[in-house]
Image 1 (cartoon, chains in turn red, brown):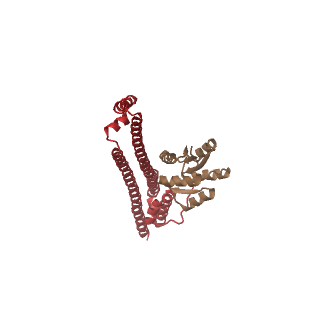
Image 2 (cartoon, each protein chain N blue to C red):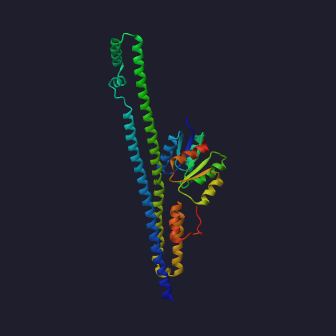
Length: 216
Length: 120
């Protein structure tokens, strides 16, 4: 009779160790998936930033003025402007025509600058949106760190409780003692969880411990 | 100058992420490392319009901080930003006066929307 009890107790212990191993494996797999998702999201955003910058550069180039005279006007300093003015004075005798020409050139140059600024502003807005997406993705790090610490603490709980049982296995080798050991480990582990997703993994293996209440 | 928001979290990276997001949203940000630090910094920053707080922190956790603020008669609105999703904790936070509960990882646009709704 006693021999049968010991066999049952050993079976409960072995089953529990097996299920606990599954729990640890599933929790670590979930953290790995979170890490992979985070890296993928960050990489998507980085690629998006690169693509956005390239597109805006392309658009900016499209609106660049390729006309040599306007290019000169845009990049000219005061001396160059005076040269342009002198050249115009030489070609035009009418003062109004000269003024109109210069005003027209200045307005066109101003328009080009405005378009450049708009393109830069669009790029800035798009990049900020992507940077915020990266920030949102990397905010996973806190959750991953917590979940990893819960896995580590659950292994420590198991080690401590198991060492008590094994220290005097003859005494503890009864179904009741092994069940009590199992319930202690499961209660402590479950109470260490904070995220719903890690509790769900626990529920899938051990059911919902309705009797467990948070200590703190 | 935007309204002043306090972020209380023992994780430096979370504080940086929230600060970055809210600063881009036009807010000023004050950082605190735990509930105790939050209460101390609130005394020096009486113009804080809202607090965003983690739950699990050393020294004084987020719920204890909310309860202390309520006991002291401080009416600054608080929302919790945490990995915790337990309904009993959410109820406790609401009973203590917390205005909202956001679960990490947070989405920047949702965070800014929540702050805008509560702090204006």
